[in-house]
Length: 123
Image (cartoon, rainbow, N blue to C red; front, side, top):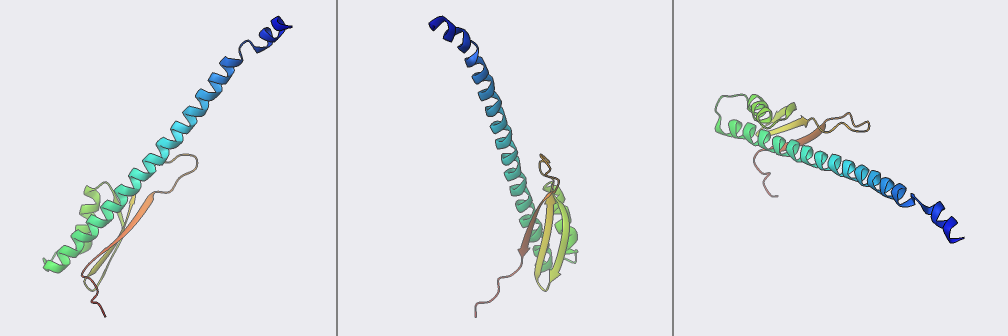
C-alpha cells in the first residue's frame, strides 16, 4: 500500500512548483503595470502643475507671450501633451495627457488638470 501511494504522489511537487511560479509571474506582471500607472499619473500631474505655473507666471509678468503657448512648451518638456488650456482673468487652467501602459484593454491615456493664478481673497 505504501509503495502505491508513493507512485501516485510522484511529480505532485513539480506540478505545485510550476503552478506557484506561474502565479508569482502573474502577480509580478500586475504589480509592474500598477507601478507604471502610478508613475505615468505622477508624470501627468507634475507636467500639468508646471505648465499651469509657467502660463500663470507669463500672464502675471505681462511678458506679452501667450500663456498657453508657454504651458504647451513646458508640458512637452515634461513628456506630456497639452490637451486644453484656458485663461480666465489671471488664472490659467490646463489639462495634459501622458501615455500610460496599455495592458488588458487599457487604451486611454492618463489625464491631469491644474490651475494656477492668484489666490481668491478671503471673504
